[in-house]
Structures are given as structure tokens and as C-alpha cells.
Image (cartoon, rainbow, N blue to C red; front, side, top):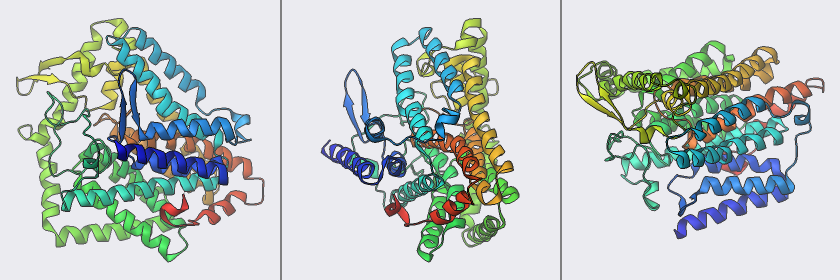
Length: 473
């Protein structure tokens, strides 16, 4: 407990110091870094209320600082809160679902948690970010945090030492040994994330970010740091043994290859050469990938059962909602899936399956908040994705690359929602909401400054990595 209190004090002190000395907006990158790095195990339980995680300490501090000294983006007054009405509709529907929840207290806590953990952060970011350099520094914070997580992942794989062992044990939805919940294989690394799959989710977002930042790097130190970061992230995402994030990363890299500037394509060529070299030098890696592919489509293997489980899960969710029109509209209540005790017969094996684990964010949203709740989230993500695509197509070439990055990140995250419950908890969800915020703000910033003589271009060049690594925060 003493370690957690010390970490929380450092977090509060660092955010306050930066906000008071450099300005509130300059504290956002450090805030993003903290939310990525801090493990869920860094928690002070408050019985009867909620768990005070380090992330929540950081959010509370940021909220107080915003009210006290927060600088407002002048341009934000013209466009309000991007996606604001859609977020209010989504929140309102979650409250409707909560009023009809089979676990009212749990659902109500979940709604308040989402407001505080995600909606508040989104609001502060959209109302505060006023400079393209801040957006780049936030990306640097993401990559820096993930790089340190990857160092912890290396220690976990080769030294059998986990950073989370320094903290009290926390039971997650994927904790091994719980009835019906997914067991985490011993050779899968998770670093500070709740589960290996969620760690892989974060890395699938982080690798394209690092590649983008590499195109801005000016000094050799910056390039070396980013190069090492990319290699570490590739190695760590491989060691997570998570097929969904692997595919999401492949999709991201293909989109970069097709749409990105020539400089990124050269880096992708280098990555391709290194990947082929690894497969030749270390044939065991190729065997692992090949076996994973074939086992995925073998219903008698553990990976095959896991793959088929997603389809069965979707069918069970649809059947549960089909029994009642009201439930089809508003579901069983936020966070209710884990209390419903779904069971059913697997049509392929004939075995009775207990559906305690919801390995799909889309299925859980559908069951928890009904088809309308699911549709609202899909529309929210789709609209943000289209805003990024619009920015990529409309902005000048020097400014549109970051919009392409956000577009790719949102496509990848949406794809990963099909195969894991990655929406509403974990560091990767914090990443998503911060990405959502800066992705819808950046086109406004670029458009507002387009008439000023290449302001955005100058900002992008100046950012290029003013200080390498965490020091830049």
C-alpha cells in the first residue's frame, strides 16, 4: 500500500507542477503517459464506494487543475464539443438501460465510472488541445509509455519477473481459475495491462504511432529511441500470442503501405526485411505462427475452441435478446453480462457451454445495452473515423499524415472489438478515448491555422521531437 500511495503522490505532484509552471495544456502528455503505464494493480480499495486506481487519481487531479487553471481552446468555442450530442445520446441510453438493469447497482456504478474515466477525459482534451504540437507530444507519451511497458514485458518473458507482482493481487475478468473465464497461458506477457490481449491491443495502436513519429524525428537519438521502441513493440506483441491484435496490426501496416507517405513505406520495407530475416534465422517463430494459424481452424484444439467460442457467443447473445423486445432495445444493463449465467449447447460439439467470459466487446455492448446501445457506439466510432478520413483527404500533405494515423488506429481498434472485451476497461480504452478526442480536434486546429502562413507546417516541423523520450513530457 505504501508503494501505491507514493506513486499517487508523485503523479499528483508532477501534474500540478507542470500545469502551474508550463501551463495546463502541457500537462496532457504526462497525463497520457501515466494512464498508459500505471497498472490496474496500483489501486487503493474504498469499500462500498469504488477502487481508487492511479489512473483515477490522475483524472481527479487533471479535473481539478482544469477547473482551477485550465486554458481553454479559443477555437473550441466555435465548434463546441465534437461528437457531443452523440455522446449525450449514448450516455442517456446507458441510463435507460441501467433503469431496466438486472443488476441495477452494478450498472449504475459502471455508468458513473464511464463518465469519470472516459467522458471527462474526452471533454477536457477536446476543450484544451489548441496546438498541433500538443497532439504530437501526446503521441510521444503513448509511445514512451508503451516502450517502458515493453521493457517490463521483456523482464516478464526472460527473467520471470513481473512488475505487477510489486502490487496487491487484483482479480480481473480474465483471472485464471475463475469459472468459465479465459485462462491466461503462462508464456503470454501482459506487462502492466490486465491481460496479454489488452497489452497487444495497445501495441497494435502504438506501432503505427511510432512509425509516424519516426518520420518527424530529427536527431540520431530520437531515431534510435523510436527504432528500438518499434522493435520492442513488435517482439512484445508476438509474445502476447494474441491473434486479433496480430491481424489488426497487419491491417494497419497494409493501410500505411497503401496510403502513407514514401518515408513510412521505406520503414515498412525495412520491417519486412527484418521480419523475413527473423523467420529464416529463427524457424521456431515461423512454426509458432503456422501452428497458430492451423490450430485456429481446428475445433479440437484450444485455439480452435476459442475461435469458435466467439461465433457461439454471438448466437447466444442474439437468442437472449430475441426473447423480449424491451431487452432487444436496452439490453440487460451495463456490466450485466457476467451476472446472467448464460449456458447453451455448442452445436459443433454437443457439449454444454457456460458463457461467463464475453470475448467480444460488440457482443457485450449488444447484451448489456441492447441493439440501440450497440448502434450508438458503432456510430460514435464510425463518425470519428470518418472525421479522420476527411482530414486525411482534405488537409495539405504535410498535415494530413496524422489524420491517416488516427484513421488507422480507429479502424484497428474497431476490428479488435470483435474478438475481445476491450471497451470500458484497461489502459487501451484510455488510449482510445484520448485518440478519439485529438482525432476530432486536430482537423479543426489545422483548418483554423491554414490561413496563417504555414502555421501548422511550422508546428509539425518544430515538434519533430523537441526532447526525446519521457523527458519531453
